[in-house]
Amino acid sequence: MWKPGVFLCALVIIFFMGFVVNILWIWTSSIVGSHQAALETISTPTFPVTSFQSEELTNLLKMIEWPLAPTNISLEFSTHPKTSEYFIINPRATYVIGESLEVLIIAKNHKGRTKNYGGDYFHVKLHSLSMKAGVSGSVTDHNNGSYTARFIFQWSGETKISVKLMHSSELIAILHQQRDTRPDKVFFKGYFEKNGTREVVECNFDLPGQDVCEYYDQQNQEKWVCQRPKKLPCDSYRDHSSGGNRKIQSQEEIPFFSMSLIDQEIPSNIGSLNVLPLKNVRNGTNVACIAGLKNPNPSGFYYQDVWKSLVCSNKEFDHHMAANCLAGKMVYMFGDSTLRQWWEYLVDFIPTLKEINLHVTHNPGPLLATDAEFNYLVQWRAHQKPLRMERSGIQELRYIASELDRLGNRKGMIIVLTCWSHFLTYPVGVYINRLQHIREAVVRLLERSPETKILIKSANTGYRFDHGSDWLSVQLDTLMRAMFSQLPVTVLDVWQMTSCHREPENLHPIKVIIKNEVDLMLSFICPH
Image (cartoon, rainbow, N blue to C red; front, top):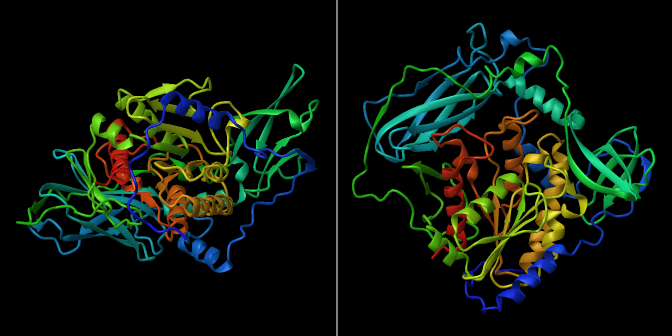
């Protein structure tokens, strides 16, 4: 059993060229069994059944239960952002930093009538444009058409309230149903090639009723299938890429997806609130950023575009501080494009950190950068399918759990993970199965390498693409936090960092947000 402790930052200086050769060998070696022999079969609609203890699985599913709207509700009786309203509970002339503010939200339908059931999804925050400040609030659903939003004041001066209806409860009922019953709404392409013959077919976790090539990974207990090519054998599967999206909404459902009803501010005549400073009290925390700290709500706030963590005493890093922090370390990043942004930021930010050209397409990677002066590396590798990215060789796409199992007890090793955005369109059992194997691999890694730091990046807000939404994202984010809650790992709460900034929410945030996210990561890597 591991013991959380102070991470040893010193690493014996290695001759740099030998260091790079060793790393490149690790990168170019393939995983045995990453795609086992294809089985030619007829696929049946079987999604992974986790091997969890039933109690844990029951508790996980209970965490993401959501009050669903009645079925077959017409659009006019669904929640409308322009008729809904909110009021301050017990308003006052002045407030003080650290005090709470409660707001009553009343959901109304298109006719302006108050609804008598809940299930709407809101984003709420306090913000100040002049001070470039923002902090997220929390929402309690009373299941009768009313909601209470709660905030804690974090700065003095101008403070405004923002309440946005992200999705009506009626739309969420549709998203919920389509997530569970139509995993084929997003599909992928498989590229087969042998002896100059090429074929492109559809691939996915499952293609019920179709004649397929099946690829099963025993370690991760997952299968992936592709339509069987007309001429080529199943073992000629070479590359993977995004395929497309299917329009699956009925004519009755389409109006609920109108952008005029999604991610819309609820109007209010409440002006700026007057918040006074709290004398002789330092705003923030003196706790060092170490593994195992829990994220309070809120977990932090922006002030002058700088994130002030309420978890621990985070720092701002210039490029020299960042290079010194990473000196002698090996930073392995596994995940999606939202984590690739961190790799790209570091390479752009630190002058001595140079990308090594691995002759791959940039977006799916893998990507590697090394710093000869400070003797460290930073890598990013995309997780295994499902993956909506450009064409990539299937041998370049690897399971996070398998990659973690290949790492030994190395000094100065930092693991950064994220896994959520490409799983939104599937039943949650698919995601739980993937996370379960990652969690088990994390446990094994910490047992053999207890000084390794493991950081898990939460989901981002701002998912605005076909078949995706922040409601689907928050469901998976809730599962991830729960499944890793008992391990000595760090969950970096970028959900709030992306939801309360003054700029519009975006799945791929702007540079100022990425800088704050990376600074928080570095604060946990180098807390002292």
